[in-house]
Length: 592
Image 1 (cartoon, helix red, strand yellow):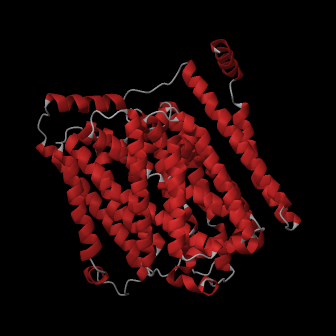
Image 2 (cartoon, one colour):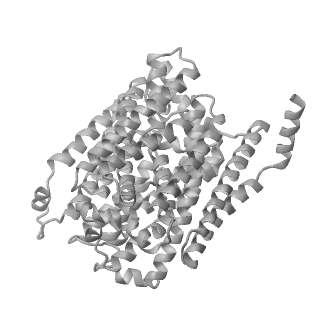
Image 3 (cartoon, rainbow, N blue to C red):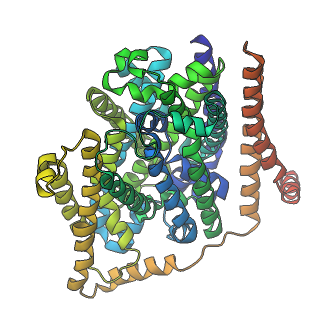
């Protein structure tokens, strides 16, 4: 316990150091919210990957893997498919929008009314999602440190808040890259250990305690599972390929870097599920009863699957390292509920409506205050979710995505391709989507479906939870998207001012962005050198955990993890262009 606390504390200090070092990169709101649009592909790609990755992966998703086998991996493979489409088409288009916040693109495409509608309807979704992530983090942290969940949510939420607010996007995205390296190194090691203890991948799959490792438990109708899988792919494709989620690539320095960033995220997300969930599959096959191991967890005992494996099979100190990385991963994911929401509020409400004459210094201060407000809201949401003792974190995430998040993506996706729509098509589609979600979430019951389709067997709780998601997605594809398409029948020529904005929107989409020049090269070098040095130090720090009293095999696990991180840091330092660096030093010397 004490050792894990020390490891987490040192890791926190290191992350605070990253924020402190990268503070010099932030001079205005563009820097604070999207790194000034000057970041290299490997930083942006790591951040894009980490926005879909948090402690929830090791709690709600790991619990789903423990109970239902491979089924949970479908969600992450669907994310990988979405990133593949980013790479093939959307990522460079997103960067070519040339905006600071995604709502600025909504304003150009659908007008000022929709700017405010999407500003105020999008924030609750981000806050709720971040609250789910924070709740997942608190489950792990409470299990490790022995605090009650309420105290853990408040303390961890405040830590995440402070770290996110002070650094801005430069610090957050730079730390995302480090988090990605540490988490992949640690989880690869855990997967290898699980495979060794389980006697190989085939044995783990054969020992999994269900008739079907692919489908899992509690499933009488395979057609429901198949339908769920198909629509999850459609949902994740829509969520990763629309204007509202284009913020992942707004920080890239040009179109080419945005495309390469998407490819990196795709590769990582494809590899991830087979690595992250192997420990859960292993302990399920071993017959571990998590309800007995964690009696205070009530119906959420399965959410402790990954924690049980790390505590039982990994060397002393590894739990602390994993928890530290989870804190930081959740911090980067919660950025969508803090930094992103703050940017939208400041750039799309405060500046244009409240204080049109505000200078950049004032806007940055307001941005930090707004981030703090959203941080408190996220903590309150996490506390509410924790009070729902019988609610699965996995199901909660699915419901929020299908019934709240998905309808908002429809106009943000269709607006890319369907040009001749009235401006009211944007907010009108959200209204229709709201009715569809209400109908699916509160009107339709399992009994209605059983009667309508004359089902012989009563729907199980799992079948119903997956069917709700599928029905919601079908409803939005038919009615919500159908409404947007039908709005073209009512299209009338726009005013000259609005048509100018719309023309500019599509012109930007079709115009590649190329970043060149000596100043950009200097900034590229600065990113490589600073982050490479920090990552190298982190790698060496992890390798020093070799000296923690463990069996020799356990000691060398830390050498492996630290070696992976150190190697990447040295590669980044090696990539620094010495000619540009020397020229910069000569210029500084002559100026002094």
